[in-house]
Image: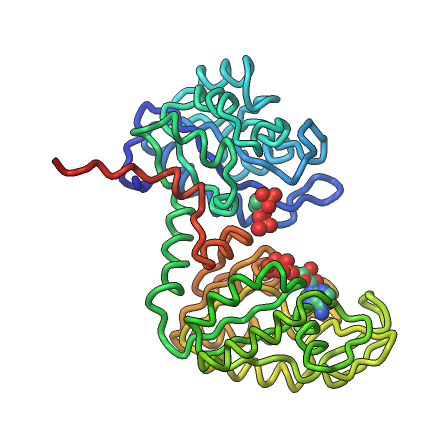
Length: 402
Ligand SMILES: Nc1ncnc2c1ncn2[C@@H]1O[C@H](COP(=O)(O)OP(=O)(O)O)[C@@H](O)[C@H]1O
Ligand SMILES: O=C(OP(=O)(O)O)[C@H](O)COP(=O)(O)O
C-alpha cells in the first residue's frame, strides 16, 4: 500500500474519498466536526506538495436522489474556515459540471463534490459510475476509514481505475495502525468495554475479543438481555429477546477461555425514557415493571472503574447508558474518567464507535486517551477480522517472482 507520505502530489489532481458523514442540526450546522478535522493532514499534504484536491463523500443515508438536508454544500463554509481558501462546489458529483470544475482546478485549490449517495449507483458499487468519478482525478486517495467496510463505487471500485496511483490517506493509515495495536501486541491486563444499545451489532466482535482480552466489561442497554437471560427481571429495559441464549453461550465461552466478565450489578432506573423521569437505583436483575434501566448504578461504576484503572490496554465501544440525557450520563462519564486515568498511567486506550467517541469528546477527554477512532461499524468489522473493501482496494497485487 502506498501511504500519503510516500507519494508526491506535485502538479497532480487528487480525487480524495473522505468520510464527511458528520452530524448536522436543524440549521444545517455541524455539531461534531471530528471527521472533517481528522482529514485535514491528508488534504494539507496534497496542497503543500503543489497538488489540487477533489473531495468526495457521502452524508447520511439519502434514498438515492438529492435531499436538501444531506447536501454537502452545508460543508463549504466550514471547510473554507479550516483551509482559509475558497472551496469550489459541484452540484453533482459526476457529469459535465464536475468535470469542468475539476479540470480547471489549479495547484492549491479545492473542489468539493455533492453527496455521492444522491446516485443509487454509489452504494451499488456501479462500475460505470466509478469510472465517471475516476475522470475527476489523476490519483486516488482513500481517507474514509469510517466507510471502509462498504464496497461502494467511491470507496473500492474506483480504485481499479488507478492501478498505479492509489494512496492510503493519513486517517486510514492511523486507524489501521491503532486497531492493529489492540489486535496484535496488547499489554496486559487487556480490558474491552462494550456498551451501547444492541447486542446484535457487537456480538461478533465480542466473540473475537474473548480470544484476546483478560476482562470484558458489558454495560449499557445491551446488558439487560444478559440480566434477563440469567433469570432477572428487567421491566421495560432494552431487550433483544432472541439473543438471550447467545448471551448465555458467551458467558460460558468466556469462562472456558478464562476471561473475566463484568456485568452491571445495579442500575439507575427511570419510569420514562426522559431526562426528567423519576429515578431510582436497584439491582440490575430486579427492575420493577414500568421502569427501565438507563445507566449503570453506583456499585457498578465503582467496580468497572477499578478494573479499567488497573488495565494496560483498553478498547471501549459503546456508552454505559443513555449519555445523551445528562441525568443518565454519569456511568459513561465515570468510565471515561477511569480510561483517562489509566492512560495517564501508561495504558493504551482506543475508543471506537460514533456514540462512544461523541461521549468522550463531549466530556472534553478526546486528547486524554490514546486514540479516538473515526470509525464505528468499520472499526468493529476490522476487529472481527473481516476484510475491509476500502482497504483491500488500496493494495497492490503481488507480482510473482520469476
Ligand atoms: N440502558 C440503555 N437503554 C437504552 N439505550 C441505551 C442504554 N445505554 C446506552 N444506550 C444507547 O445506545 C446508543 C449507542 O449505542 P451504539 O450505537 O451501539 O454505540 P456506538 O455508536 O458507540 O457504537 C446511545 O444512543 C445510547 O443512548
Ligand atoms: O457513519 C458511518 O458509520 P458509523 O455510523 O458506523 O460510524 C460511516 O460514514 C458509514 O456510513 P453508513 O453506515 O451509512 O455506510
